[in-house]
Length: 226
Image (cartoon, rainbow, N blue to C red; front, side):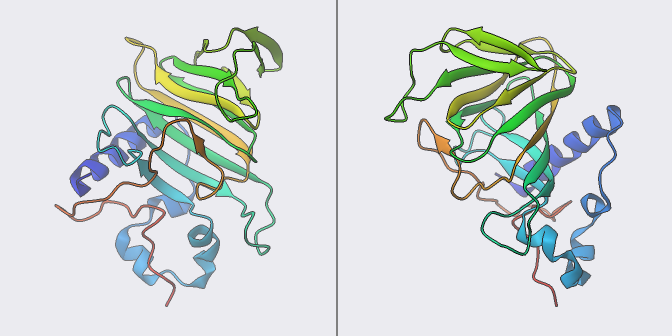
């Protein structure tokens, strides 16, 4: 992706967040220049990859496959310094974007439609070979048990949510004509390095072509404390 595309995506996400009156923590407003001066007091943010993130899954088709997100809080299963057992994210997904089918070995999560259009989440149980199972899928949607055939897309309108347990394949797609969506994610600790099982092999973080200065630093770009 070009840096200009990343910058535009982050600005679009900020506008959506502002529209739905979700207040972000102060570190989300830091400029690249602010990060150059940030000391070790910001190490939790650095170590746990808090802040802005962009993914195109290494496919180079961000407007079709990918989305923008902010990790607001996160523990760290690989670092005993951070004992927080939970995480929270905001995800901005546009009407023509999708997210590939995947599950998590360790993380259970709630996906919440915070505003905008309708999100469609397709679900499959995984079998012993980590393939799609043909069995019916039972999930909890806002405390209500829902059972659907394998491969069903569950529709979440604003305010609705679904609980995704470990081992449950799921993807994201916005219902055509409903508009862009702001999602929330409340989960166990997030670990993108070792806890994502994609059905088809994809990447995670994009390669960035620097055609302009960064508007915000991504969570993988913070300079070390001085």
